[in-house]
Image (cartoon, rainbow, N blue to C red; front, top):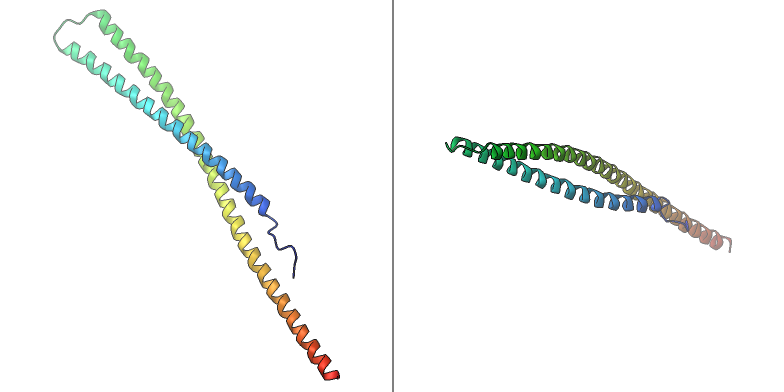
Amino acid sequence: MPENNKYPLEPLIKARQAEQDALRSQVSALRDTVSAIENVVRGLKAEIDDAQARLKYEASDGVAMLVDRRRLLALYVKDRGIQLAEQHKRLAQEREQLAEAMGALTEVRRALRALERHKERFQLELNLRVAKSLEKTLDEMWLNRRGVLSYE
């Protein structure tokens, strides 16, 4: 019977599990970042829409709008539009990083599943070898007893 029945790739499985845990936390952090940026984008869009609605309302109200106020609102909308574009760019970058991290996590999961299947096959083969070895030993013991008894 083999004395060393420990799975030889167990350290690799543990390393992959640690890598998977690290990637999970990274994916979680990236999801939170993407969510926060999406909230900022929604807020900026709401501010822009509100300012544009105010500008349209005051222009269509029939009240002579001060040129300075109109200019200020237009600059405010333009500034918020620039910020919105920057946030969209940042959001795209964060989403790309999230996709890469999720891809890496998927790869690690696949590798872990393959290692687990290999471990199961290894254990099954080991059990079969142990059973055959035990059967052979029992057969030899039986033959030895028969041989010893027949010589007396």
